Image (cartoon, rainbow, N blue to C red; front, top):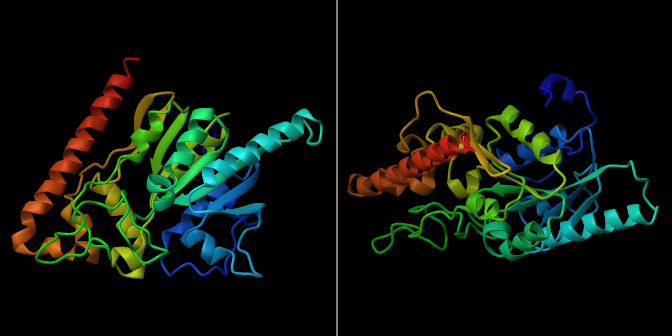
Length: 315
């Protein structure tokens, strides 16, 4: 695969333009720009589940989308992508679309519409083998409707429905592993990414779009409103998620694992936690045991991932 020339891409006509209502510092606009720039060689159709990205970029009569764009319900963007892709193939068979015309379908959804209420539609689309790229914008809660916990929310995080107090330490359950759930469907390409490591992200988008089949990209997306951090720290928080191995960057290509970035000196999880107000209660002396528990969780996941990578080299 050719090396991405970032500078040359900045001269292209933007497919996602300014003027949207995303919060200052929101990672989602940055991620969408990176994804669509990486897809520059293709005509694309974007499908967007209800959520922060949708409501802020399509305030009638304005739109930030300079490509064909479909707004879907919270829970069914993968089903809609399936239908659009099936219609595209049917129109080709009937000669309504030239055989050599190549259109790529890209679905954007948040964690609520992916981990939770959209999981059934996503699983069905993956099992049927529809050809589209599903981009998960993982800000780890239902941010658009008031910062409620989702199954993506980390353990011990504060949300409006997992409050912190004498009775509760925040969310009790650990974060669901959506990447492994998707990979278990046997799809050709699954990966994680972060806007802080944009070349890695854009390379993975290009690789995903090269496949004829369903592909999945889980992108860490800091939400300063919900994560309770300064707007200027959004990319730093995303970078520290990677540097602490909380959000490792890897890909699963045809069932083989490969870590695409290994921190030279992994930082303790506390360096990521202390940047976000949703974890401020964990900085108290009486909660150090919970920080230790999160660190052990991160370490175990990282060790397992490295073992999977080593095993993949033998296949």
